[in-house]
Amino acid sequence: MTARRVFVPVLLFLAALGLWEIGVRVFSVPAYILPPPSRILATFVGQFPLLLGHAGVTLAEILLGLLLGGAGGLGLAVLLFYSDGVRRAVEPFVIASQMVPVFAIAPLLIVWLGYGLWPKVVVSALIGFFPVAVNALDGLRSTRSDMVDLFRTMGASRRQTLAKLFLPAALPSLFSGLKVAATLSVVGATIGEWVGARRGLGYLMLQSNARLRVDLVFAAILMLTLIGLSLFAGFRIIERRMLHWAAHGRRFG
Amino acid sequence: MRSPVTLEVDSVRKAFDVRGVRLGVLDSVSFVASDGDWITVIGPSGCGKTTLLRIIAGLLEPDAGSALVHGAREKRLGAAALLPQSDTLLPWRKAIDNAVLASEIAGVPRATALAEATGLFERFGLSGFESMYPWQLSGGMQQRVALMRTFLSGRSILLLDEPLGALDPLTRASMQEWLLSVWNELRKTIVLVTHDVEEAVVLSDRLVVLTPRPARVLSEWSFEDLPRPRVRTDLAFMRRRAEILGVLVGGTS
Image (cartoon, rainbow over all chains, first blue to last red; front, top):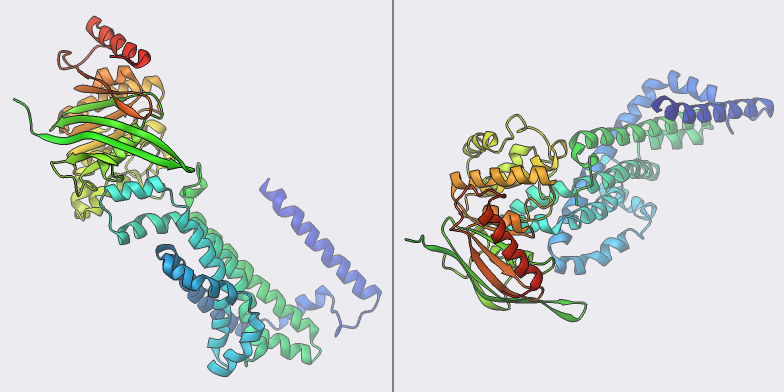
């Protein structure tokens, strides 16, 4: 069953690559327009040290952005969960902030924070925090009320109830948010680098594009994809380990 | 000579607004429990038994009348341990960590709490299952862990809301016997809610029979003339059971 589940998408992927390879060769598409997959793979392998160097920078931006966005999203969710006043005051701004295209803020962030790591981290965090906040708040709110009552009869303080009941109950939802944030933060870091950078995969893509090195652009895209997939898979593994209880029987909360 | 009164429910009345309609749940319910008493409350489904327990636990305030725990109307919340009707083990905690939840919240040092709980695991027929998660335990075992959590709460009054309701008849009968022996050993004041007359006669010192909603006390029974352990096939036992059933079905005392 598992073998088959992997087999079919892999087959489809290889077929698409084959079609691409044949098409490019049959119609003699120049490599600066669309290189064949074989050439992209060769570039990926040949330029691997270069790619790895830029990937390290981008990965650092992504991880810091995720950390910041995740912590911010969770913190905001807890705040909104506990205080109706804060929710009424802040919620419109939180939603409005999602209507502002990140592309529009990125140049400003470069002006404010310079060409280094931080504007990319901030862009990445800005994109990632919303799904985390929304999902975490959902999870906090879905905690069963009979459990909350039980904690009250035990004389639990607010803080104890948060740490021992609400947060664990919200973990499955929090992870859903983090997985979305992980994929978005890759986009965020790349956008940040497009607007202004001296290093990173986004920077490499722009440079290569300008020099008609489309193969290197694709190699960088492949690297970004691998980073995104690894992040997603990493969260899945942590989730399975931490949330084995949620996979059994009915879902809690 | 009687033990001091620990629980006094006096003419408690409670109504709820359900979609704009005033729904009387408790009309006038009164009973007292002395230290170490086992009081059972029985009545037709939906007659407000759970509401009564929630009022005693301090989760709700009565509209009229009073509920006094240890002689005080205030600070009921946290004075009695509640075992809710629904399954309320925390799925992310092992059996032993669920059992010590109340002690943990009360700030009992972990080593002390664990030592106390470990001793009880054998008594509750759960030795060897300390490190299992709730989903790994059968329904009867989960219920015993929940009962153990209630017993370990350090409270002298236990409010049990149909703790054996979801179990099959065989498990239920052996759990009743076992519950009785645990109670004999630990001597707590118990208020048990059930809809099983036989269970009430097997277990309790006294029985409070409620009318359909809005509930009043239909009749009160004492089983002090039936020596424990009570045998279900005993003539006196069966006669008492039939009398109570007659009252419950007929609605007059």
